[in-house]
Amino acid sequence: MSATVSNKGRHDDKSVAAAAAVMYHARTEWGHTKSVLGDKRTQEDSEVEAFRSALLLLGDFVKENDYKGPVLLVTGSATALHRFLNFSQHDTQYLSLEFAQTIDTLLTTYTQISLTIEFAKKSSALVGFKRARHLVLEAAKGPLADSQYPPSIQYQRAESKAAAVSAWERQYYDNPRRSQAYDSALTTPPDGRMHLILRIASTGVQAKGQVFSQRVSREIQSTLTRLITGHAFTGAYRLMFKHKNLPLATEEEIACVCGAVPEDTEHVLLHCPLTHEQRLRHLSEDGAPDSLRKLFDSPKRCIGLLRFLAETRVCVKPRVTWEPG
Ligand SMILES: [Zn+2]
Image (cartoon, rainbow, N blue to C red; front, side, top):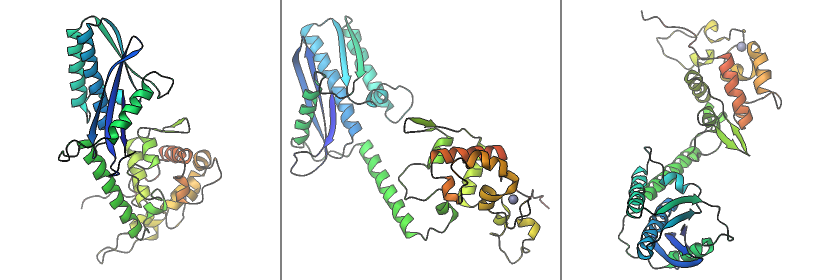
């Protein structure tokens, strides 16, 4: 089976989703299906359709030929099978259930067949791929059946995500970008993904064949967010609170335990002598970092920073515990 979203050979230049499936038996093509889903559809939509039509085609074939024996369904999409045959709760669970029912009906009606569903890398050496690819591209060139269909949910989701990211990007460029976040982790326009360091601390990140992962407690995760946004429990934070009824901050309130004034994020992460040893161990592998940005700029440094925070527990707790009075 094959699926695509393509505008190749179209006069209206619309990107159209299409799907195709080819059935082979005894080394010859028994039949095929191809369908156009229309524009405002995603690659995922067309993969659903490819899987659906492959199952339909198989049903026809088995019925007509009274076939007994093994059947192999092959898709060229590495993610499709996981999505369509995953029965846990997720966005497209209803599709998985639909496919499970179709497969169940097939197997209980024709008890003599066995079904294997596989992913194979797209290769022209494999029988059927070239043919299915050709069919699907032909289908994508075809006329759109009905222009009145609504966009699919997947399409709408992708569309609104793209709109949100671009609005975000506009905001990024319009802002003066003076906050601490822009000087540390938020150095590039938003792309709709979490910052590297947050992904390393939760799901882990795969880059250049290596897995980067560093689990830290929730406490450390929130400390990290406060450090990035400039709301960490440091002495300098006290300086942000100005009110005519609030007495001026004393030196004691804003100084670091080591004596440095004021105790700010740069001091805590880059300079404080009290955590010198941990800084050498976790943050200085490629030379001592001289700016906050550097701490966030590579997977290795991000892991180092997470370890540094977990070990030193700097800024985890408020400096003063306030007694209600
Ligand atoms: Zn210090």
